[in-house]
Image (cartoon, rainbow, N blue to C red; front, side):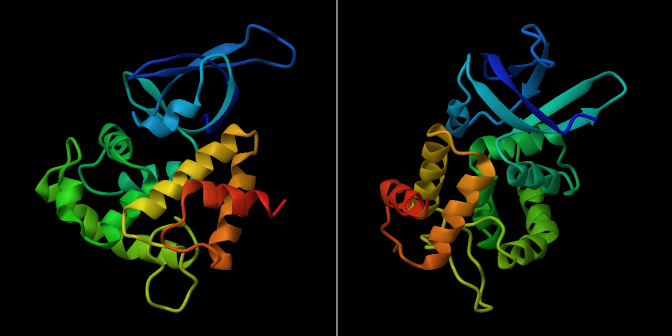
Length: 219
């Protein structure tokens, strides 16, 4: 089973990204077709450049599909979505095409039924099942420090600055993508931004530039 790929982006379109993975110094390698969320955050995967993809391998009788994600956390949220009755990989991918996982977690925790129902393919019954099946488990993960930017709850743990599903989450994600673009690896970027959020130095009006400046000051 394929769980992770690192290679050069050969092509990208709405339905598939092809990642060329070489062996040693082999310039040819193997190209893997990977399905990804159709969201602007994936614009950081540029043709000709190297990218890393956290992979979920979905095997059926008539096909073997690879689903790729920017981070292990996003992949885990994708797998969590598929625990909901009636949600398969295609619908889970559609959900992540609507927004990043932090914003989606916030929507579930706040029971934003209208927002969830606006996602392509997600009907009222699926929304109800998502809230029933996922809310408690996601709240526990948030309380443990996962999905930074979502509401940490009311048990006294530090909160990342929060404006619901709005500006703070967007600023955090923009800073995350910018730092990745500067060459930092995913685990390092996550650690830096978590330290910034935990310090409480940024307020609710912090911009992506504020997040980036604070993160770089930790180096």
